[in-house]
Image 1 (cartoon, helix red, strand yellow):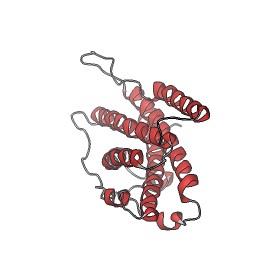
Image 2 (cartoon, one colour; image 1 turned 90 degrees about the horizontal axis):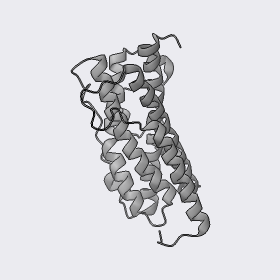
Image 3 (cartoon, one colour; image 1 turned 180 degrees about the vertical axis):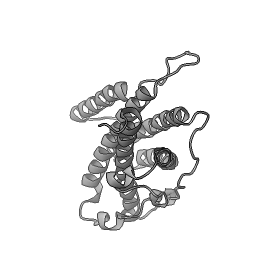
Length: 227
């Protein structure tokens, strides 16, 4: 990526940055005002922010996957190799709403925490390696950086939610380890691009699951399943 950009590309980046900032202003409200002591936020407000934020993350991950797919993966047959190869597969997450409804809310909260924690390391390295890619679109870089930051915010919010549902606890520390960094750094272009593709495919899938789980949890815990 060169330092000099064409006017059209600069305008695109400006629009993207503006959209990200507008979305962030809604999704990333601070849990407590700056400098506040003994701040208490209601469980309802915490869930409202978590649901907005999870939807924002899923929207960004979907856009990033689509852009990467269109730019790098066309004609390579990556999708057939990406099925069931996510690092979070070791976590027994329900595949649909019907399965999720059968899980106790405390177990579902722990699953959300586990998935979010499982993405801490890969998101950090995703940002680093995408920025190192030759001619990587700045739009993808910006979205990767934003998702990494907002995943941390959502995890913090979920720990607060668990602390209110079960006072004094921060939830299970079970999460799935990621070992995909060497694949993102392979010299072979096809192998390296597939590693990126697979990671973004898994991110889109998992962010969609979390989005659905949080909506279900909010319905259960805030609206007594009357929604």
